[in-house]
Image (cartoon, rainbow, N blue to C red; front, top):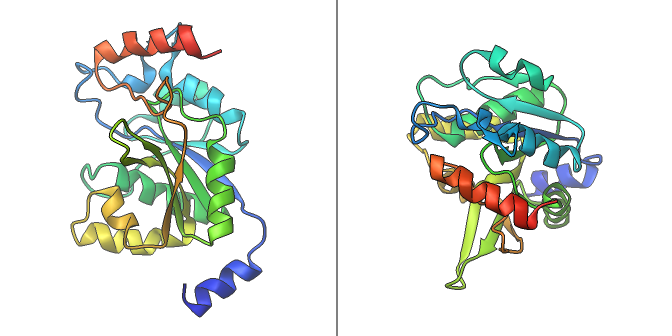
Length: 220
């Protein structure tokens, strides 16, 4: 870590974190339905995500493109990507960094809007390890059956000062979250892989049935 970066951490006050639900995807494998609004156990998927986040952090916003009115019932701030064209999760992270920094947040924690079972201690563990190791980014990870570390790049904490660097990376054609993150001071934080898989995400209609089974068997 360079001297200016170390000095910044030394004098920085306690983290001021905003949670952002990334819901800007196209849901292309959901037969035209927006997956975050599909019902799981009688409640929209995104509301399960919010309920899990609310137990960990108070400040929550949603990154989503298109008509904001479809999320009006959530009573949460909603903001869109600021990049032209669909550039994937990095565009949502970029918008979140700028939106959070403009409102005085030192960090954002991102979660995917299609992943209802993420760890109940996600925010605490990511922020603790980030502060301890003086990192710029902390990504969640699990170890798979082959004993390989699998990172979950939409689940992380990000220093909001990274917005300009990420914009430059997008301008240069970078599209993978890990490609950009690996150029920064990034750490990984390992979580229990389950069962159930805490990072199971709902991409296809059949995944809703799997999620319902997980919810009934393992999730209170």
